Length: 253
Image (cartoon, rainbow, N blue to C red; front, side, top):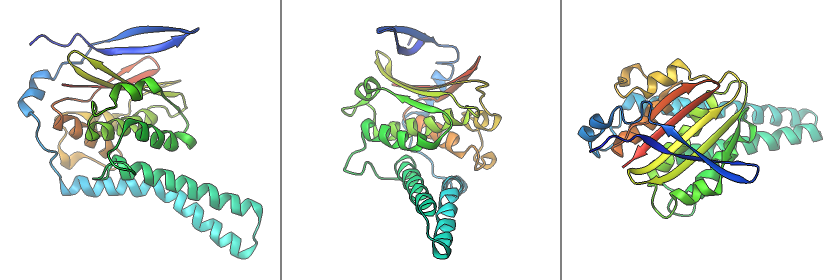
């Protein structure tokens, strides 16, 4: 079978015109033969990885929970509008993060049945409400992967990819989500664009197809898990660092 020469076309709007550019294969297709040998194997649940996922979840929600607790203490001493606002914002942030993790890491689907890209986009937008980067998830992206084309596990992988993009933009920027149907399969990608965009070493290690479970940490377990989801779909999640841009891409056959 011929190699994939380009993962997919990224659409961008420039002065009202839709332009496109092909993301060159670069490393895309590098692990093609290895992916075929793995096949559609089930994700191997490792106890240590499960514990690390729990640690990561707790780490990302403990700040909001602590702020809420602080607000409760303040309101008992001296109720004020500021304290009530703190309680509301902390509770809202905590709810949004828990909703995101419930879907991205949980076993079930969407709130009202089978998980869709539309619901995933709303959950991701909720996560990014108080993140440094902005999230760009277009209706075209949702339409390209809906109607069962992108399986629930693939949607969960995409949600985790948005987190990877966020962590590449310590100084802010834009995280863009792309999904396109191609002859070779479904192209899924997330790009992180911004000043000093950088792929952290620990994320790169977690994305390594040969990363041993015993070396995974709470800082990169979501990258490791996203790669595991890709493996289960006979694909590989690859990353590429460019000038002020980091790209994460996977081609699902």
